[in-house]
Amino acid sequence: MSTETPMSSPQCRHLLDSLSDYVDGTLQESLCVEIERHLAECEDCRVVVDTLRRTVYLVQTLEQDQPTLPSDVRVRLFHKLQLDEFLEGDTMTEAPAK
Image (cartoon, rainbow, N blue to C red; front, side, top):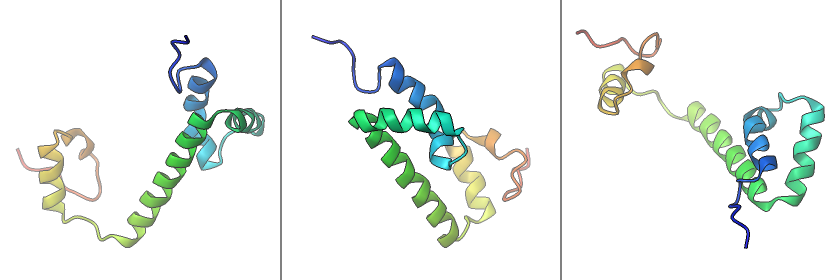
């Protein structure tokens, strides 16, 4: 019985390292060929790639169609989620006064 779980093989882990560039279309052609060959044989990785593509599409679509959060709401949300460091240098919000 194999102890390998889906996405735990070395080939799958290597794929994950390059996945974002592959989906964005910025990966070297030789690596794309390697990934496509792997995807032809690995259903788990095909699911991951498909999910990432759909997620990127949805985020891009939502960014175009959704109004931005009011600055004060964004600041409160990030503070509540303890993500204040992501507000530093953010042109969409002004950091709360301390």
